[in-house]
Length: 468
Image (tube, rainbow, N blue to C red; front, side):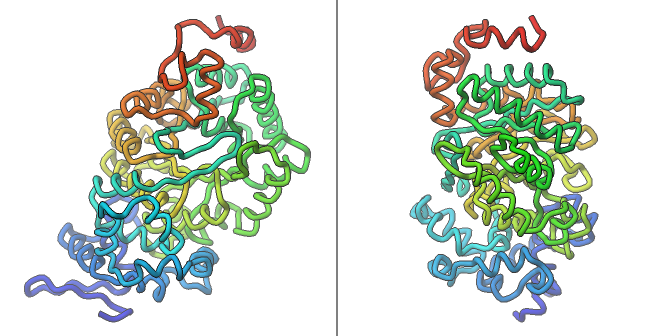
């Protein structure tokens, strides 16, 4: 087997893959985005042969053969320059197939996984995920513990956090307040209270950030807020004295993709330092919030012929470098051009979660789909349940699962309660204690509301929303 060409013989037929990039793409489980890009296996047989060939590949190959040239891509440079030879040493002798077996072994616990984390490149993580079944991805991810903190502690064992997403199509304060109150009363919002602004400018960012900061301070809520605007808007808001908790940005796995988002690694570093300078965290200083999604590199024409799942894993190297509080894949949001149906969305969600947790990210998932995809809420129930068993850090919480501003379907406040009740999962500890103090939960470990009426401290808020 040479670096330039990979072959595998099955009977009298020889399958040839022109390079590592081609082999990785052909080994990927079927999805519409790779077909659209022209990199997918043409038959199920070719896909299986590619997976068999990939399984025999030494992990060291990924250190010697860059999928995107080092000289052309700052994400490749980041991956190579930050790779830890010391952390890689315990697994350096393994093939991709051996790595799968090692990850699944009973003796390989969370501490062992954490010890090699800095030695695993995104391409290694992507490669091993391609030869794993759903149950493999779930089991290994469930062993990975990744913690982060700002005003509460995210990612502790036995916990499932939620992003309270009170979006409104006109950014109406009363509408946002009503959704925010509704979510809090269902125990949602410990990961972040995060708004996608309908009007995306600096003045609006400051207004929304200030409004959320006022609510958090008034009720003493141990959580953090974020307006999901472009990083340059957040930087300007910080410069104008806005009470910014977290800096948000969508990121991709190639320099070209990030350039299409209007960002560079240097810009992200500048934003992180600006947020850190505010010193608004109380129990930690993880100040970044990133979103990713399979298909973004292809959509931006920045994929370099690399399959979309491997591009996605490379985005996790970017995220990991900036020590985020939260990362999530908006797995079904980009559309059926990239993940066609519920089956592909479920597979991608499990891959994303596995790769990110293996690489050391506090990974959540927007369990979602667009209305023109061949998927429905039952598919999302399946993915939510699987991710919750796999140790997903957080999911979204939206009234009725329907984001009326972004016009897509995701998970509701009730869905998060379902997952918590089913698996005995709890909110972040500081937030859980607040839920008990405010009588939203009847005791710290109870996953239900105390009564149908409003707890006393929220009675004035009802009047503020204009509802009865």
